[in-house]
Length: 324
Image (cartoon, rainbow, N blue to C red; front, side, top):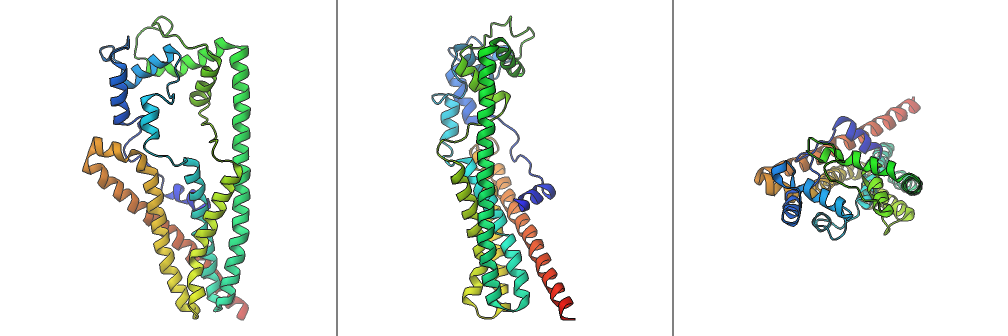
C-alpha cells in the first residue's frame, strides 16, 4: 500500500486513451437501440449516449439496467471484481517490497538461518496486519454505504421534490438545449427505488458493495497476496547454502517478480479499454498499451530496488557501528 502511494506520487498515472464514459461499441449499441424510437435526435445536438440516457430517464428505466446495451457490453468485457484486483494489488505490492527489503538487509549478517526465520516471522505478522487492515477498511466502506443509502432513502421519501431537483441538476450537462429542462419535456421519474439508486450512483458516486464478497474475503485476499509476494525472496535461501549467492539469486528473482507485477497490474488497469483503443486508434493504441506496461514494470523495479538498497545499507551500517 505504501509502495503504491509512493509510485503514484512520483509516477502519476494518466488516462491511456482519454476519459470516456462508454466505449465505441457501447455508443454504437446506444445509437442503434435509441435512434428509431427516441423523440430526441442527433440533429438537435444530442449524442447517442445522451439520447439513450434521456429516453431511459423519461420511461423510468434505470440507465444502467441489466438489460441495457451499456450494461451488457460493459459486463461482457470482464467478470473479475475490481475490488478483488485492488485487494490483490495492495497485498502483492507490499509483499514484493517490504519482506524483500528485510531479507536483503538480514542477508548482510551472513546467516541463512537468520534470514529465513526473520523473513517468515515478518511474513506472518505482516499478513495478519494487512489482512486485519483490509477487513476494517471493507467493513468501514460497507457501513458508509449503508449510512448514505439510508439518508438518501429518507430524502426521497420526505422530500421527493428535492431529490428530483438533484437528479435534474446531474442530468443538466447532458442536455444541449437552450431552454430549461423543465420546459423541454424531460420528466424525472418519481419512483423511490429508481430515484434512490440514481442518486447513490451519480450524486454520491458510491458503487454498491459486491454481494459476492465481504470483509473477510477482502482480508483474505490482501493477506494471501502479501504472503505470496513476500515468500518469493525467501525461496533461494531454502535451497542455496551460501548467503551471498542466495542473496543475488533473490535479487534476480525479485527484479523479475517486480517487473512482472508492474506489467500485470498496468495491463489489468488498461485491459478494459483495450478493445476501444484498437477500434479507435488501431495499432497505435496497442503500442501505447505495451509501452505503458513496460513503464509500469520499470517503475516497480526502481522503487523496489530503492527499498532493498536502503534496507541493506542500513543493516550493514548498524552492523559496522556495533562491531567498533
